[in-house]
Length: 151
Image (cartoon, rainbow, N blue to C red):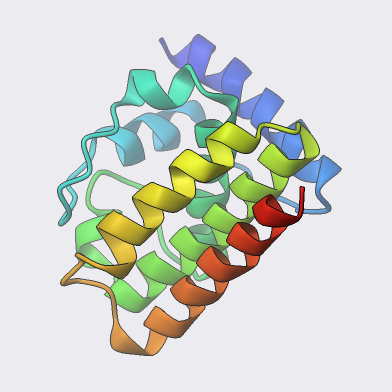
């Protein structure tokens, strides 16, 4: 399994470089631990879901990379032991990169689906979202919604 994860990480790193993003080095073990670790949300996305989606791979790689850039150690408890503001800042950066990659690939249905989920599960119904980051979440939603409508 770790060899498969390592290969998927390499592919996702190349994709993020296409977007001008320099990801931190993430090992297959770190990726596995992060994806199978403790969380505070109701997210039901599995490791297999992520490994099977180039867009989710980009998202998770960027999310972990952003946490590393903030000085966090990627392990099974990083999500529950990190300040929520860090988790959501990393998530929003990852969301933007994921959606930009989907734009590059012209996968508009993916963008639409992810925006709907972002609105329903983060903007409207996430008790953990720090209030000071709520405007950033709305900016992402509005920007990509406008881009979709313009296509």
